[in-house]
Length: 247
Image 1 (cartoon, rainbow, N blue to C red):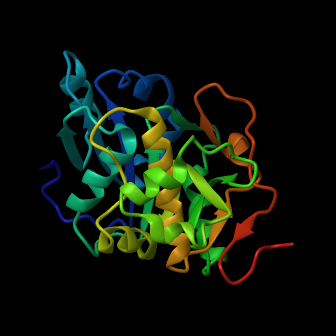
Image 2: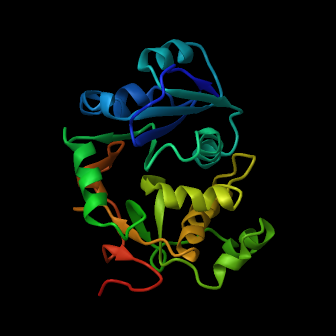
Image 3: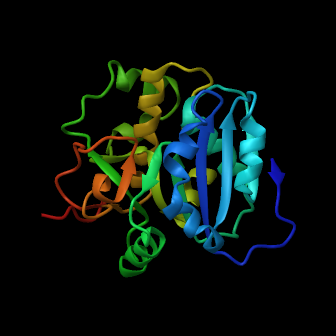
């Protein structure tokens, strides 16, 4: 990984964006719009790319990320996030915002809104687009795959929700849990069904360790947009934890 800024950052928030050699043009179409760039002086930016191609490096350089990691194009974005988080300086950041290259913000005050939400909810460790596992159609053979990968212990008391694509705002306490348990579950190939199992397991791990989850209000499609989607099937409640599920 390259550390592209020579000075030690005073920011407490790092925005981590995963892209790839086949999808990186989404960055200019979605993620790095005006509202994102307008807030750029207030956070550190870490980019991770699965693969490489012509035109990619010059575009990445124009974004002036504080960190840039290029890796093999395997394992989809979960593997990319895992590799990036393991290489960021431990203990430096209080907040981690994980985004895919086709996420984007419409509200110019998006950063303030997220940080104020976190400040107002000190017991919540994860803010994202929560998907209800009871309604979610899990991929076939979910339990078998989970146990083969070594994560069967999280199936005894699975989280009622998971964060879609692991995108969202995480406190450092949640990131630390992943790092203590060998990182975000991922695969070393590009089999989509296996990756979807890992996506759920990532939330199950945090829930198992006592992390509370909250849906970004008023619903992520109204706040943290994903490509051109206008609606999403979200969780029925706003907060979830092992101690209490909001009625």
